[in-house]
Length: 301
Image (cartoon, rainbow, N blue to C red; front, top):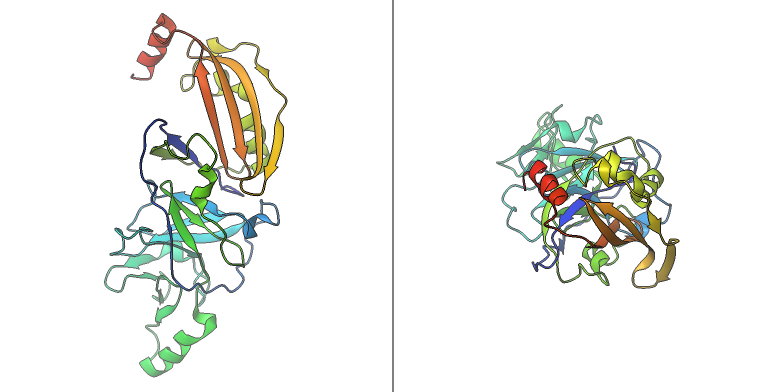
């Protein structure tokens, strides 16, 4: 489980596509959500950044999905009938029924009412987190109970961008748009999300960044995926520099020279704090070489 999110996008450059991205317009019930684990983010991040929580290409639209994000236990689900809306109907709520704190992710999405149903006692909650059904109580009493703030599930503002569901964890009004992270990069107008890949690991954000900066591990840790062990050569790189701007925040950049798939490569690494990094590389070799063809054959290319 990620203390903070790390989602890899397979991005194909030189291709243009419209970015599906929008904000939900629902009112969100926001009682404090208890930390299930210590937050892995900097204290100010929740009030400054949208957090990527899951890929729409990997979520099951027919069942709720549990996600622990920044120490919060959350549930991601899709409202039936809203699949073609701009946000795809995706919602993010606290993963605890206010009745007996049963995980809502173990419940079901009721197609008749389009609500999230708790598996313990069948309480139901709509896309705003409002309680809509308490089966164990007569209608008159149930109406009063449903209206109580204690019967609401905390819900969070969501947007969809780059085929990812993003959530605003801060208490203040959401700022900007998650798609803004592409601004100023070569991907701003030329990109296509061709796939996503997500792994859950007991892994800290600081360790992840250290791993991304350490390009010398690639021939060994990713043998057969990004080149082979035979590609290992001394790696040269510039000293990382951090630049700040009001529009893009902090950006860490460095250039490195290595070898992969039998070809020399010059690449620039950029990290736009906190959740977006990318490489821009150029091969300095023969793509028709025998070594490259052998690698492509192993990969099925």
